[in-house]
Image (tube, rainbow, N blue to C red; front, side, top):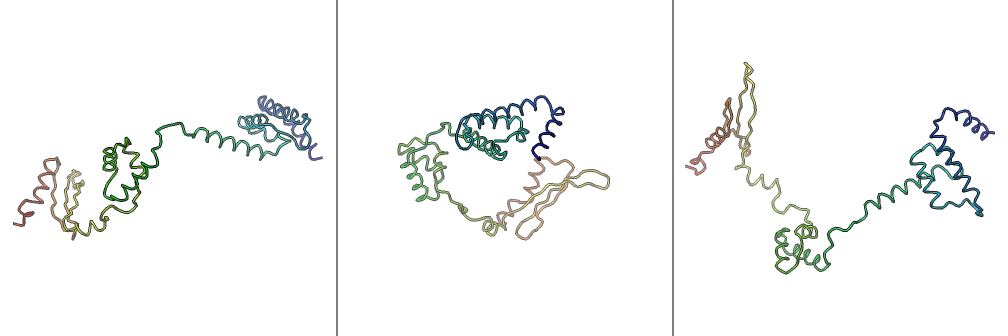
Length: 225
């Protein structure tokens, strides 16, 4: 009774549907009849061509899921997703490129990198060229031992050791009460946040900034005179 009611609703709604949609649904139904007419014992046998045809129809018109009867709609969606994955796996396949180097050369590169931690890719690349190995520097960097720690002192250690000799400089705009623009240059020492130099101008130039830095750090002060 329920299937008959659904059929009656489909017949009543058919004039409202577009011509293209009706033709696609008829094509899907005819294809299912062709499959059912095959004399295959047991369950319905579907070939790869049948699956490809159904998936392509679903790709163009997802509404045919309502017309599928011999297979479950989720099965057709699973076929479509599997085909999508296969397509992009085929698109992402290896298409040649630079050939891999021999295992002996890879082992030698890693050994040189481990035994000489201060050597970078340019130095190891040069040593390999001296030994007669024709290899690119980028390939050497690829097969070097990866070191995740900092090569030398960390940023905190650097600041602790050199903070008394580091200064910060900033050039910012100051608006006066008459809406004029002034440019202020401030130099501060990072050790104790001491103000080293401050000056204001209406026309900051490279020469003016260089002169301010020279006056903030005179030669006699650096020499301790």
